[in-house]
Image (cartoon, rainbow, N blue to C red; front, top):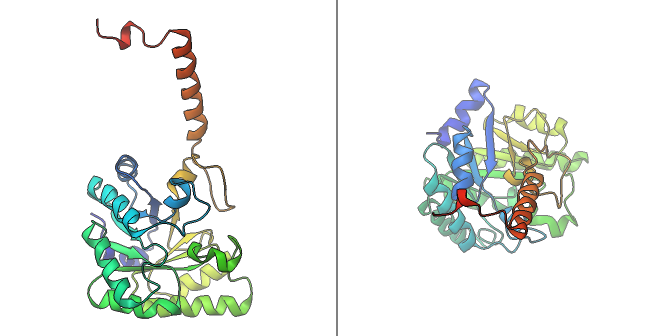
Length: 263
């Protein structure tokens, strides 16, 4: 079974961490069967599952529900619970309680967005044995502040701040850090300067690992396709073809045939 300490071992050995999101038991089993190291139960479910414009409305109850589904269906993959908006920003005591709820739901670690503003929360969690994954760069829970989904760290001052935030998260005990939508050159510098692994999503090839939203890489979600997404399948096309065939056969009376009937 993949464990939290394995993340740092992978970095030492120069082995890439492979991470994918999953939100339900069926896809979690498929992801694990594919040999994926790490599953993130992402608050991205607000967009790809619930159909919302962003992740801000996702609740703790919803995240815990999906975490239980994924954790209950897997045996080998490391499961990370994504702490939703306002489940940790209000203070470290509430953050600590909510992080504990994720572990009780079956997660092996939690992920938080942000840098210096959440250091107290990260320290509080790691001090009581709750593994934490950081997340800097484009942080979707701050989409209103950014005015949309935009690449971060292009300006030198901002890039310097992101490096400082990542180092502060490492010092506070974070086990790894997700780098989202930042220049590849900046991600390379951060990866070289940190002793904990970096997991990139739109951060170029130099990170210690990569993460993608499952529905994006399978070609199921095409409402919004960021530059960094590479679809490895086109399952939406396949699903539409199958549904059209089913509709046609029912309307024509060719389904169900004797083969699909009890005689």
